[in-house]
Amino acid sequence: MCHQSVGLIQSIIEKAGIPTVSVTLLREITERVAPPRALFVDFPLGYPLGTPDDDLLQTRIILAAFQLLAERIPPAIIRDFDVARNSWNSAHRGSDEN
Amino acid sequence: MANISDLKLAYQVFMKAYPYRRVDWRPGARLKKPLCDARVAVVTTAAFFRPDQPSFDTSIRGGDYSYRVIPIDTDLSTLGIAHRSDAFDTRGIASDKNLALPLDRLKSMTTGAVLGSVAPRHFSFMGSIAAPGRLIADTAPEVARMLLDDEVDAVLLTPV
Image (cartoon, rainbow over all chains, first blue to last red; front, top):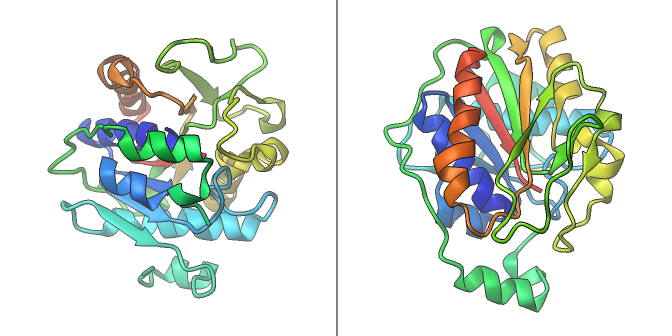
């Protein structure tokens, strides 16, 4: 139920006026809850930012998520994080994440 | 890879039949300044709590809808984890809390001038809330008000 809880909290914060983005490990649930912006990461449950102690990967995921804040909404956005393609540098430059 | 079909059969049955809730967030909020000037905060449902805070109550029917405030100066290695769900592997967040509450990563990003600043308060829920009425009516709006009080510009949320 973590993904529903995240989506609901996110939607309430967004409604209060602060832009939000979430990470999702279960696309099917996030599609149903439909929060404003979500980055789908292809990792097991319990590993939203990838790998423990992998500072670079965690930073890349965070940057890719924050990039979604610049996207026009509605409708709700669920974008894939591409582990192979996304690099810290390309994310930092603002390249498209899809 | 996480799919509903990868979970235990009992979870699959529950999750496919469950009437998921939505909250209407439209029209949506806009980032009012560049990230390099923005103050950011994290909300996680990893059920982290500090040693000086009560744990979450796993006996509450429908799920514990409370939250714990995690100040920015918290030593992440001291955080406890209340989650008892066997739907996911807790070893990752147990060994590196940044995996769900990436305060060290965000601090590094401010040093590199990628982000403006990290908010003074961050928030932890226990995500296993099957009956989210009080979450929607009470605790999530409380957290939103605190984020506004802290003049937060953007929020990152992480499930487990």
